[in-house]
Image 1 (cartoon, rainbow, N blue to C red):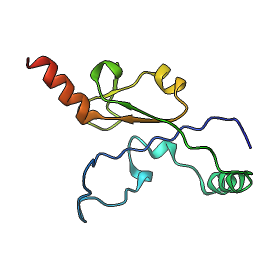
Image 2: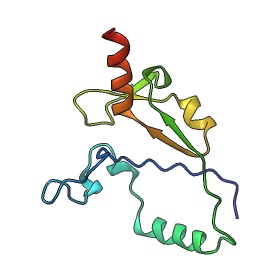
Image 3: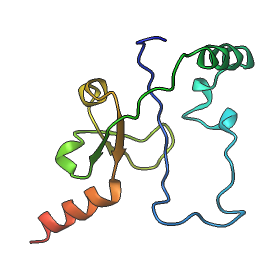
Length: 118
């Protein structure tokens, strides 16, 4: 077992449904402009799989923190390929949270619209 923290970023832009093929295909991230440099080599994957298989027990479940208000996301990123930058949490928020951070962009947009249209 190790206390080393691992961070995983998962993007799921489809909140309520998944479009049918061919609209939503498995991505080839080796050609993805924002992720291609993050891919692991086959050797790294084997090493990590071996290390995970040697763990004595499953990791405990993590708490979920949902960010759904613009004030909770003071930074922005175009993720290396979007035409517009999306609101993002700060580095400090990411470092302080050892669990799952859900970025509710739709909720943040609705909150922003509600606050600015009144």
